Image (cartoon, rainbow, N blue to C red; front, side, top):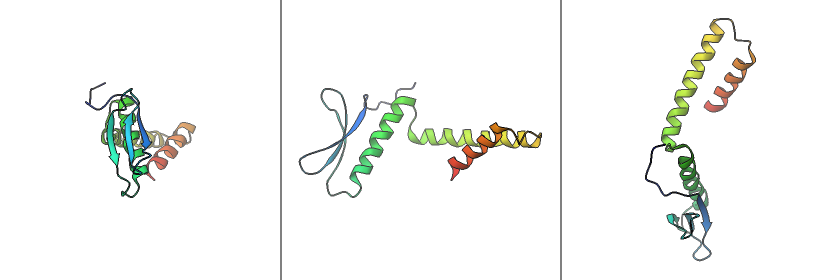
Length: 109
């Protein structure tokens, strides 16, 4: 896995008891600071959760969210091609084809 240079360790969202800020930290001993969302911001908790989720997901798969999206789009395109070929060759009634179609539909809604 490539090293992206981001802070290592599980990223957690912590509601600061003072000032009503929301902070994203790692769970290491020192509580490494990653991002702060001031109390005045709308949707601060949702934004903090998004940042923490992106950081944790990136560490698990080694890809940035934009890279995951590109990979997903490429996989969907290729799955759709496979389904088309199976249908063209008379295999459109297979359970796997039906499940693949459902997955494509769900992912592109």
